[in-house]
Image (tube, rainbow, N blue to C red; front, side):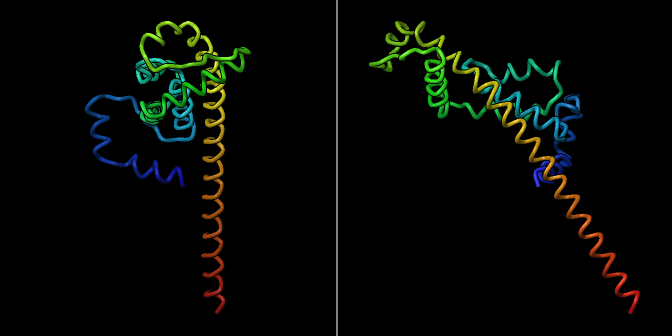
Length: 176
């Protein structure tokens, strides 16, 4: 199922023209299990890290690892202005838990409060980022690999079933 969706999108003539026009290497747009799952891994990895220009960080990895870049960039967009406060608060709380800190009380949403408490926020935030950036992205990478493999197995089983069904039907007709 997953493969079929990507395979239909791959054959679009507009996409092929875009690739040819801008001389984009095919491996950055390839649609296979490894490329898609690596794209998800890299995109989520950078998406969980609180930093500006996460998409540029994704692009900086391209010379070293071959993956589907549009998928990776779309995974980075999961951390957007709506989800960021929740993600970063969760990472901050996780960092406090891992460090054994109590955390800050009387939080104010003002620039002066943040500038006064920046050093107390930064360390727990980045320590709390580690389990999410490494752990969650790796778990989802493994999950997508498993989904893809199961999809291929189901597709092969379905093809075999249809083949034998057609063969049995043709044998019935030839015997009659």
